[in-house]
Image (cartoon, rainbow, N blue to C red; front, side, top):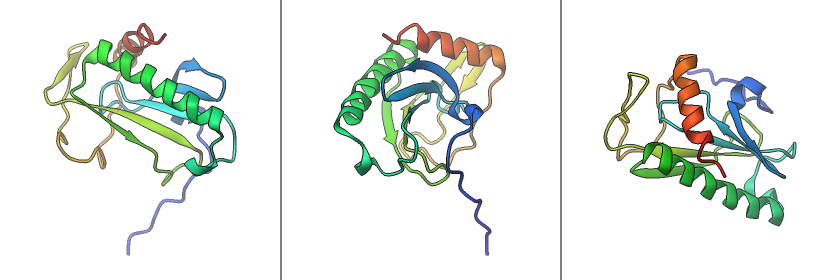
Length: 148
């Protein structure tokens, strides 16, 4: 029988990723793992919330606004072919959303190839992808420039 990893209640700062913008109720991050180039994470600032049904109206309204901002920025930065949106809570018991850009064809950043080997399939599982600091900075700068 496989032993399951214990879940974490909250994010560590490193797990959140690199902050792109702070909003009233949420924070928008560039995910630390870039298997899907430009993958974003929207993290609720209010602690102790796991289920989306616990969100307040103002939080929901702002979440939709940030999701649209993130999507627009990724379209300008990398022109994804499709977007997946996910909230799971399997590993971290703190409400957050993933904006997962999907690519039919490879993208190249800093001479590094990003290929979506799961195209037309669910985004998970994926091997995750840690990128070097320079490539991460280039990805960050391209997305940040488009965040309004």
